[in-house]
Length: 434
Ligand SMILES: Cc1ncc(COP(=O)(O)O)c(C=O)c1O
Image (tube, protein in one colour):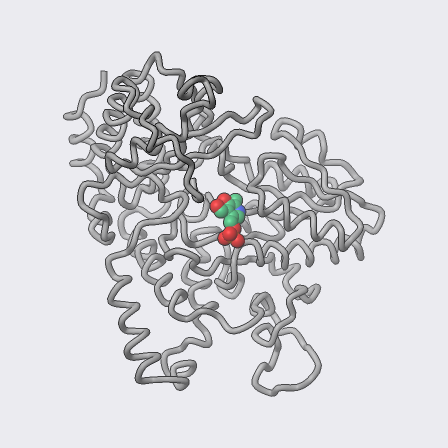
């Protein structure tokens, strides 16, 4: 049996522990939802005040030059690029993941139409995050492609000569299962298929080597593990061999080669700058830097290798403690036990019919009861087919989650289940955001 003292000993040995101090976590909260919205960097509030009072308030429009606003999307891209195996000049922070996905999927569809016009399919995973599938539907309509949705075990067999594009999310939002990016990309390229990767649940959470895997395009958000703040700008990467092949479809002036010449014709900038569209949100973009700076600092504490080792230790511990202490309450595990196939979250399932009066699974209410105790995770509804059940989802950001947090979180879960307090009506009323 693992004890609280064992967990405290693990925290005492944790080389990443000083980085927790970089976050303004509320007292009494165990935050296991950094895979949805990251915690607030302590530096954020002062940075917002500086941007609003000095750069905007005093500098006014001169701050586009004097405060370097104009180059911030690229500078942040360069700062973060090594964390996803990308080079300088290959990444920009801009817009949202949905919008960036539209840009890169369209670029990929244009390339495929020119290089391999006979290919008719865009493949993805049925349990991919819905916005990815919705954007793909729009691009498929525009380019006459068929969107084919697969289960993970069907992907290898589906990489055939009629496929133009593979669009996958590296770590699945619902299960925490992680694809082998290098293997999938190599198999796809062997068949001439372009690979687009969504890194929303990978960036800053697991090792990513886009160039090493020879991927074609990638997008991802910064408000999860990167702690950029709610709605913070997302990022986009294109392999240098593809960056300049086509315009991306949202050909706004910030992606123009010479935006301040104000010419009527569009001439895209060379390089990743062409993936910009319009004026970027500078308050939000500036705050994002506070999140990225913590990653830069983390390099001194062992970088991604240390973060990954701690993330796996945290998720292993959570799984072990749930299995030791929460038996007999209908919980299952949706997340792979195998390290190579696991992201930085653990998803527990609960069977339909175990909720109040057998109406649902009770998973939502259990999460609400935990939140009321200060243990914040979230709930994701099952897909109704039985393949994906209702899920209690817990994210483990190794920058600020500790081993003792894990022990207390599981103890709260045990008490919520054994007392039946989750059955209270207040925990069984669905909020707009789950
Ligand atoms: C895999 C994935 N893609 C995209 C998104 C969201 O995209 P956007 O930031 O455009 O809302 C999410 C949000 O959780 C996600 O998990």
